[in-house]
Length: 68
Image (cartoon, rainbow, N blue to C red; front, top):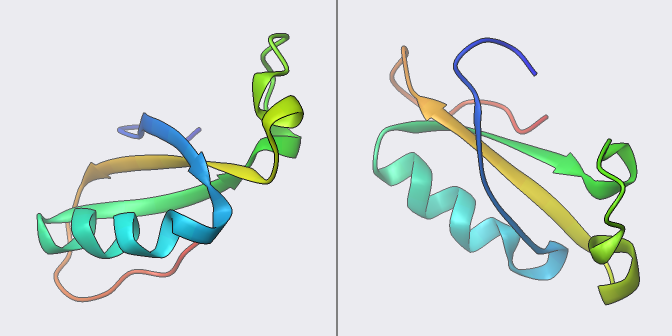
């Protein structure tokens, strides 16, 4: 992951939009990463359903940023 990004948490895909809105309102850039690209061996996300990871960093720009 690029410099400055930190994982916030893993969340169900159907709920991610509300967290994107929340973090952006607090001045963060937000990236959504599909758990299929996860490099951890635990596999919990795969067993539990359709999940994504939410990554954040303090915004360096103003305005809306694209979701990756």
